[in-house]
Length: 200
Image 1 (cartoon, rainbow, N blue to C red):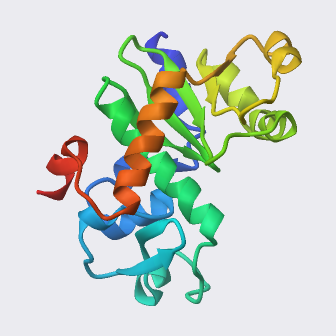
Image 2: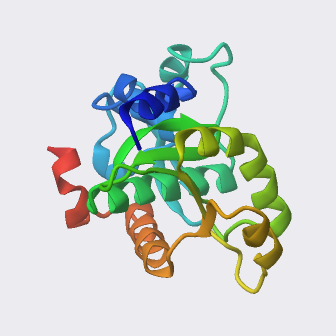
């Protein structure tokens, strides 16, 4: 992708990761949650769910970004947010740079200069769900000359959607497996080697 198209693509980021990276409270705002291994610092608190435990914005932390300070992510929302964080770690380790976020979609700059728009949720998207998410970012994907990756729901078919939208691709199974495995480790409060450097 040429420089002009890349500069155009930067303008549509709802959340620019450069403005959040490095500050745990800001990163929790960006991703939705953070794993326990990032440390319970000012602006964050622990929240336990049936599937594990994560850090979420505390009341004081939320006041930095939102009008409503009384809010706790639902179990599904928190688990999806932790999975997005895990994908960030996995792809960063493979040479991708996180540029920002549009709604639930993370935007990466790939090692070959391409833009990747990643939609990930625990259990995957149904065909109707992925059509909804793609519709919300499709103009940006085409503008950036990028690709749209999504996690599929097991046993569902996406042939018509993929045929109608050639820029869309199912996320490679090995990446999904790696990210889901990392997410489960993080939910247990463990510190995998992949994210050790984030905690220093």
